[in-house]
Image 1: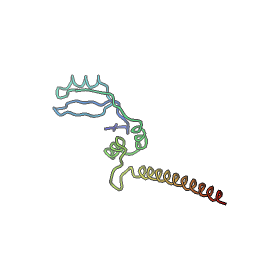
Image 2: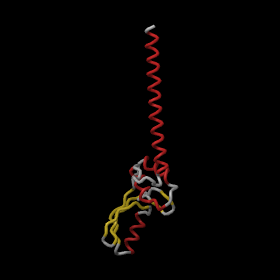
Image 3: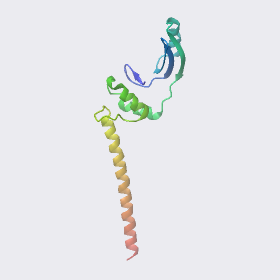
Image 4: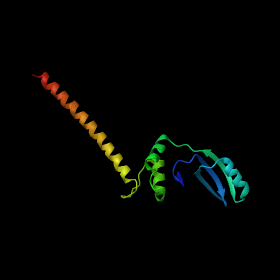
Length: 132
């Protein structure tokens, strides 16, 4: 989970704990001391471990593109930031971003085709000039 209540951001820690016997693993921002203090106060809570979260540069870049979206798109945004895969539904909130990426890929492909055609025309012209 990458959600933070004041907006989208990556959490710095991955915490594993038991709450009422159920093991939970989730990204959190609180320090280890926070969880140790919590564990002392509440007998139903047991801290298992806390580790620094490790996010890729690509995940951080994807988060920058979606951090303006509202909270109620939580799972879609979280999945996209983690994996880079857009939701399958046709009208998802990331559609503009998805279409923008598709358009960029098409433009890059068209540029490569244009370069190839120019090169082919140039070679053809050279061959024709050599045969005269």
